[in-house]
Image (cartoon, rainbow over all chains, first blue to last red; front, side, top):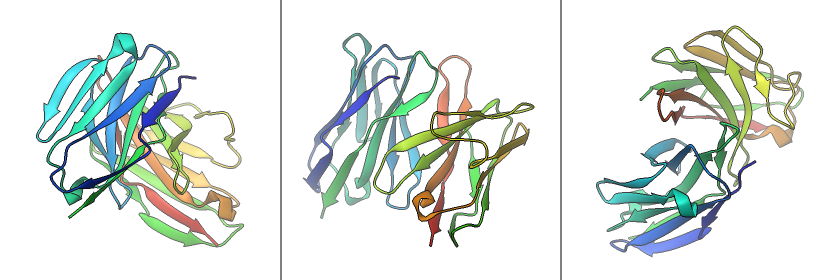
Length: 108
Length: 115
């Protein structure tokens, strides 16, 4: 199946800082989603972004499908941004494959 | 989008017993999925729950251990059978919404601890 690699695995930020999370995938994709898993385990949809750029408040994402990567930007981070960020893609098998995630800790 | 609920939200079970997890969606959906998230790990697809037919299981997951029901387009159950401590995980259901560019939405999860 399709391989999804996320970097960095861990990220520690001071409140107010900006950061970039990266997702590389090994093959063409039909769908790419970014999720935030909060400390209670709930998986929250951030973006559906198989290509192009989207913004939602302090978060934005860009996917360059031809180069097989996506970036998630967090600006002016807040403690509520802490948690695990997952990138997931749907490839030729039409199944959602998850990366290992990036654990973000924002310190006050 | 879709609003998904799961019951129970968490449980602590004895080894050798079984637990059935329920997943309810607020609208009719064709595709429902069950995932497992072991402690500190990413999500792994267990099976796709098809209405009116048997579930389709991924490699490493079998029907005897994880029987699934899908009686209608808004509801599904996953049973974790003959549990062992290795089954301690978060179990999540998800649904696929949309025709052009399907998006998956996830339920809040069921946190299972097996002692």
